[in-house]
Amino acid sequence: MKKYLLIGLCVMVVMMIASCKPASECGNDVCSADKGETAATCPADCKEAPKQETKETSVSISPASAEANQGDTVTLEVMVSDVVNLLGFQFDINYNNEVLEFQNAQQGTFLNNGGTVNTFCVDYKASPGLVKNIVCARFGSLGVDGSGLLETLTFKAVAKGESDITLANVKLADPDASLMALTILNGKVVVK
Image 1 (cartoon, rainbow, N blue to C red):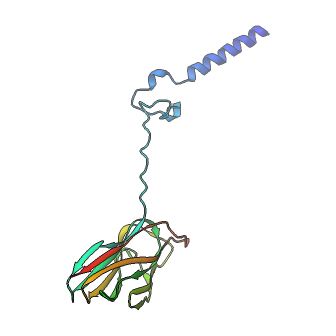
Image 2 (tube, helix red, strand yellow; image 1 turned 135 degrees about the vertical axis):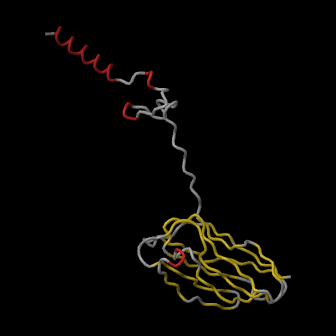
Image 3 (tube, rainbow, N blue to C red; image 1 turned 90 degrees about the horizontal axis):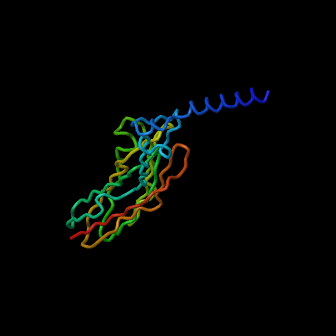
């Protein structure tokens, strides 16, 4: 009986060895995951997938620095970059009302995909030095990905000097109303 047990055990060991991946398969330029090859066990065949570079979402004033002459119209854009699943946004704008006079804010093309998706924007409140509650959202439950124009801001240069254009109370939301992490890049206007 011991003899048969020993033979059975030997047969099992031989079968296990036969089912193992031969060492010669590693290095054949084919990553055979079904044969146990991984980047750790066979780096010649199985390259590690490149790590995805995660980009940080930002909201910025463009151009970051603008020059104008007294009496000129100054147009600035509020841009979003590298956003994922954006359903809506809000922000305020602070500026030096001794140098600039706010004219208007116009919805950009990013949130509504160039007019193909309906959006809803709230009437903003403008007072000297502050434009409050610039808010827009997409209808439906699908957000938009990528980079683009959120709003166009128009000012009149009324006096020589400098004005920081500062984004405040900036919020980007996805369809679950979750707020997104972001970087804010402000701007400046110099009136000559």
